[in-house]
Length: 510
Image (cartoon, rainbow, N blue to C red; front, side, top):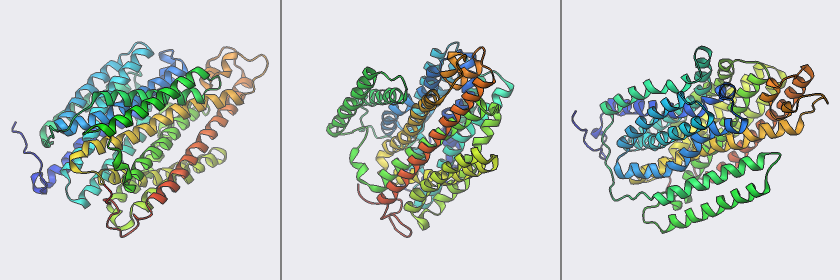
């Protein structure tokens, strides 16, 4: 097959049909990545039971994926800048497919955690490439806004479809099917990439710093351990102190190194641009809320209300349904509405929607669905143009770095949600449960333990249901509060990015 010519600043270097086919192609990879981020939410009770995993192991099965991916993303984006994003995308697809086979056949929780880490390696190679290829191929500003909005909507939809796909597969097949489904999709994506993706122009002068990547990963591991330990009721002071020191020292060493490198993994000066900084904050906050909402809601309705995995997945899909119109229209009307309304206002609407889910739990399914739809409407708006704000405020030669920062913000939001809110579910449950004197001790550890504990009668289950209800409400309050705070901060930062502003997406300030 003949190699495609390098892209140039001229749109004709990649025809209209091929540009949009490229968008579909990278969208396929993006769906794989985001599906795997959330597919375990509905599968978690089944995995915990089948692999006899503890609650801590279950959280690490989920967390290994975003943790490793976030630690590697900055480095993989820079590697894409140096060697070409098409090559990185293909390499990531291959690793992702092989890791999926390993995960599907994992005999123990430890092997599954390792496989999830390897999945993250493939995802980290692919993720920046998806957005960087769009940045390079779509040189027309209006077209690029629309293309990135489509990309953003696929990210939202993929994350929301994960619980549905996981639930549907568990209805018919063994738990390994939630990973095996990746393999045929990978094969199709490889064929599409070879057929339509152009050879983007590499920048051999760009350096990849392995030490910086290790520093970033160590810092993130320390932060996750710190969050998990602080959220525990029986926290260890030594672990909190140790994890806190690793996080602070790791970040200080990382920042100091970046300022000295001629080609840093993270150019900290770019955060002086208000639109860029607001896009990063909005992406992280939106994913934190969405991840927490999906995790807590699927667990509550499976463990307390008796929903099947598929039914709980269908329930949280209301977030995706609500997000579709706002995420697709956000990019198309960005030049008219401006970043301030779409990001700040979107996060504010999302906060109202999450608050509405609390009303829904008390007053019926209709109210709950309405709250989820409104949440999706707000988050879709913010997430679609957050990507545009980030990519549009970075030079083309650092498209990989900007894409990596964008993906780090998404993955860190999801990672923090599982680490903090997953632990908070158990902590509040343990603090608020009031068991009868003759109740089994296991029922006080977690909701899943209460359901399987020998001798747990109606009184024990009733106490467990009430305690988990308190846990769910606490998580929803935290999600709504974080969204409201994010709305206020981004509204202030974007005060010069209103309707009619020529710099709504591509402000100066580099």
